[in-house]
Length: 90
Image (tube, rainbow, N blue to C red; front, top):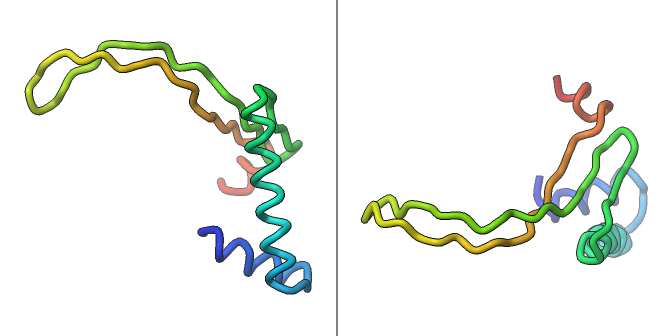
């Protein structure tokens, strides 16, 4: 499912115009993104938790030249599925 399909599904299930559904979907994504940028978690009981983890700098290997390269540290987004979501896809 992509963003357009999500907007269409929200509009249909909520019986609202697609423009309003798109605004709602965008607001949810922006709110989650804002929380993660601020260093907070976004937890939704039964669905899952989005969080930010720091990935340390490390040495990698260029597969073509077999030369060692330095991979810089960075923040990554993690998602841990909640129990209801995990059970529903079994």
